[in-house]
Length: 230
Image 1 (cartoon, rainbow, N blue to C red):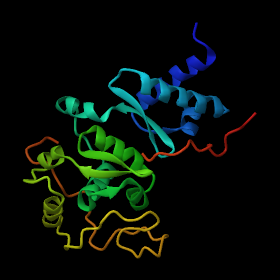
Image 2: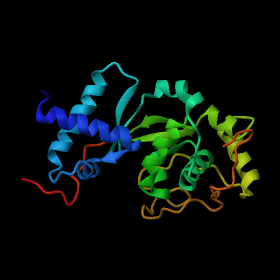
Image 3: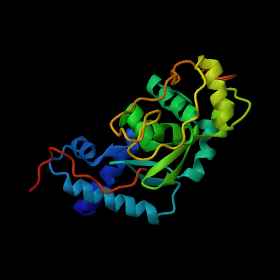
């Protein structure tokens, strides 16, 4: 008979698997119908440790203040043939911004489109369209060869992809932004940490169409606001 904590770990695992997206401790607590987040927080940490020592194609990845049950990076290419590429407008927007400004930090993308960036990066990574690499306390994002193939771009080089987007979207050429420092936004002075606007001529996301197709940040778990404690 599993202990109470073990049972909660299994429940957390089930919710993360069924949701298919990163979830915070607060969201997990609500989904499980509990009032106190602390047992859920402990269960998440236990699950994370369990997967780190388990021989599995899956892993529990911390994504900002959220957690995702996902494929390990090295197994993502193995599922491309059976992974449908379906993108909502906000997903396409995130992908376009990554493609245009790559390499771009996930923290910068968050400042451009909000916290939804965490979920969209995980989705795009699962589709094999975006590759992530740890970069300090955040992730560096670039597009993959599969992205270039999917949109019919002859080259996977960032400058060629940017040129393609400028031609396809009618965007006026602008200097390719580098990886913006923490606290500074793309296309604004680093001395203005509150600005979050993208550079002039930022590409609109809804234009690119597939060619020949039918179409972590690391950190401690933050205590969810509004959760009761005992």
